[in-house]
Length: 256
Figure 1 (cartoon, rainbow, N blue to C red):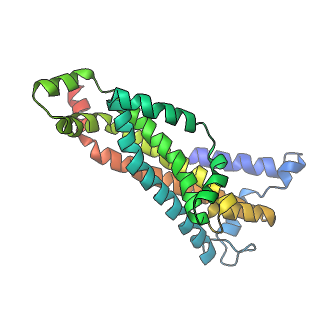
Figure 2: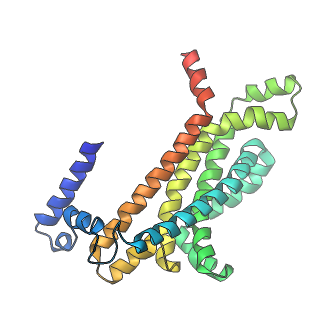
Figure 3: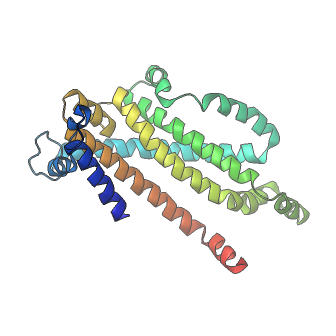
């Protein structure tokens, strides 16, 4: 892992320092970025020692978390309904199939018109991408459950509520958490795009503002921070999923 990081940094430095291309020479090298990032008195006002840096981080984290929570609360039940009910699947899948290919940035003008403030508009745009990923992966998880489990539960007299709790949710859980990890990553990149257009704070806004002010090290700092936050949030979801699915690992181990 560290060899990959160091190799990427070395390639980055070589492209900036030695390639005879003017486009690369305008970019900051890793040393310049780290110096600015770790400086108590940064040239462009953004480093780990400045309050503005953490203010942008908090705004982005709040928006991504709110969008992800809404996508989970709405996307998981919708995905279960699509995977479990054929009639509901025919109704909802057609609508999802129509809306899912629309890029998140295409929703920004409508979101600004629909919602009173830019804050809700950015969260809505971020929510859409995470919502589709969550709903579709949940539906795939439900549809992948062996039909024999449903027949066995029905033969034992299980009600629909018991089938949902004891068959559908455990059977779809691996796909649900896969969808949640994808949704969190998608939320971060759509968040940055929304913040560039319709926000006054946040890491996406910081990237665009730094570009307009020709503060190239700050752009890379904001990009790296987005990557770190996205990685950590996905890791937390993965950890929660592993803890909730210990029974699955044990059953696989016993089966082996």
